[in-house]
Image 1 (cartoon, helix red, strand yellow):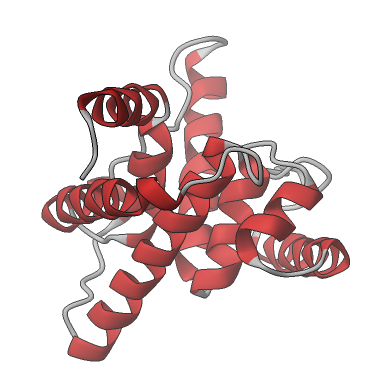
Image 2 (cartoon, one colour):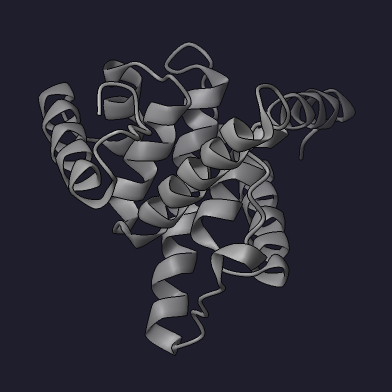
Length: 181
């Protein structure tokens, strides 16, 4: 049985890194209700797995991403199998990650459109590549991405290059969204 100290430690870590949970839930669930359910499911699984977390083997965030992505990928697969997966229009998506303000209104609108395009592109990717892009956009190293996803660093680099090529083909030439794209 876990003590109060474990629970307090877990709650503090979860609170500090809650953005990871919401970001992954937002990327793998299609509507507000499903995102809330998935975020709760991720938090529950993180708590259930917390006793097995070994800080000597991995950083908390690396472990957290691994657990959260496994839950989200399972959720996405189950939704697809059951036919419950619903698409929302871009106007209805919660694009919390879009930067606000700064620059002329036209610049802001163009930036918002670019982020909306990126968000839609990410939603079209299969579950592994979606996780890969999310980790890349979090500025995770290739080594950490490889560790979280259980693939080699070379595979990370190859997959990212292919994704960037695909994205380039879908964007107007003058509007790169991903760094190096």
